[in-house]
Image (cartoon, rainbow, N blue to C red; front, top):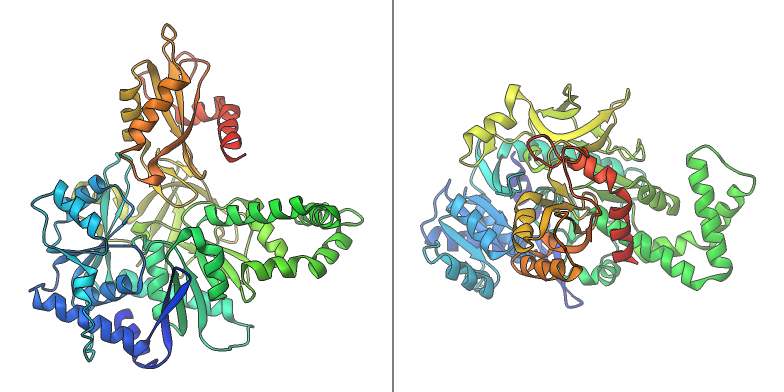
Length: 553
């Protein structure tokens, strides 16, 4: 049985029970298994009536919703290749991806975005709004079409170092293997917890990201209820409506939660702040095997009177937090472990069907991203690059045979990540071979196009260097020609001009003017004038740190 056949069968077994919810404006909307199947059939009927055939591409452009899930299932059931796109992406970037994938039809949730795409691309394929597809005429469901292992299910676009997005093709075999692995890990997580109904899962990350989509399919294929948050500014309130057993995160959110808890307790002051500080210091010393006399006392007290209330505020039934897309600081992982909430890390790329490693809940090693999932081989190249092969590997990039051959040279996928592995098989990510900046929100950003555009607006600048790897936003380092003046006002004005055409996560939020120009002589440029990014980051580490401290203060 394929993963899709399994999902349809599970939904049939839940005719009157909720399987999917969305929270919008503080109200929860639920659909049962039979209701979701009816909506899927309605969408399938719409697609077939428009003459769409198996193997054709269909773009799916919208934020997370029950309708998004319905369309994804419907397209897949009809054998269409789903091209999911990020609804907050700049329209010019969306148009570039659409022109690359050339879908037979575009399904869009937002009328304004639909109009803007048509304005920028008058020859665009027909765009259908979600409201047109779902007219309330649900139908009796029919079985999904059968997929061969080699059938391409989706093309997910991911950024490359050139700044031009590439379409990653994923097959039925990729997804079948991955869902078996994720379900097995979640079964391990729930072992030892009394079963009191289906798993409650909370979700807020866009489904157009590979890991988010795999979580969706995993939830639909097991006994669970998936609750979608549709407003990231209301996550705290939405969590109280869901009370999940677990949910997927990016490091940005966990770091914000950690900072908020710490700030609240410090503002409260008094004995509570004193106990919390002592308990936290004691816990860290315990992890470093350097305990002091009263550490156990402060931890015991905090665990009795403080930590239960903090856990309750995050999620009273929470079994674990799952974190991926970017490295999580070990300090943040220790913080939640101290509260009694395990943090399970995952590592992977879109090309590996989102996951290469995933923590075993019974054997978590803080600071590491876990063991390779079953069936996956990982090794280190001579330059420290992580290489991967196995049934999770994508067959190639859409219409890019040369780049596919390069990425899969020798039968191994070259991740571009540097790492290390210990004797027990645990992996740790230590850096990037490529220049790609990965924010701790999980967004991948090629710095060169933005650097070039900013430099174009600041002719007085010698060089512009973007930083922000594992940070929450991008910042710019700017150097001046020794003979020219460069003012803060010049750079602020230029950044405003550049940011206006960029999506939120690619916008530059802060900058610093460096005290010296870059040159081969001072070791910051190669002999042919290319940036030595690691050397620049090391030389100006204090300036970079000051940027982020000042911005977040």
